Image 1 (cartoon, rainbow, N blue to C red):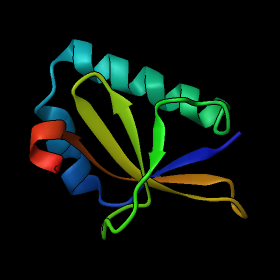
Image 2 (spheres, one colour):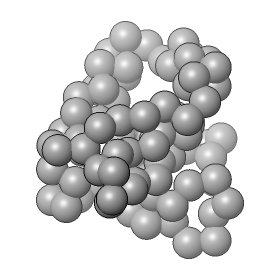
Image 3 (cartoon, rainbow, N blue to C red):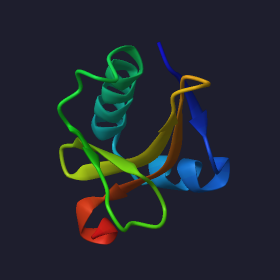
Image 4 (cartoon, rainbow, N blue to C red):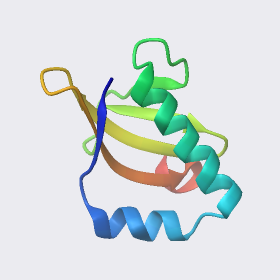
Length: 87
């Protein structure tokens, strides 16, 4: 089981505040699934040539940008953005 770490709490709070409660609940449920089953999660894609994060989690129209550390078993979340603002 992985632990979740928020890299920048101020940006995370700003990103979360822009979401509706339904979207927020959905993203949090996907993050808890990711925390439990890192290898089996199908909505995770490794990003290439992207400076902020190494992975993204797709949830509806939103993307969660994150890295993971195998040695400490942690997932470091950087941003939650709408896909139109990300790419």
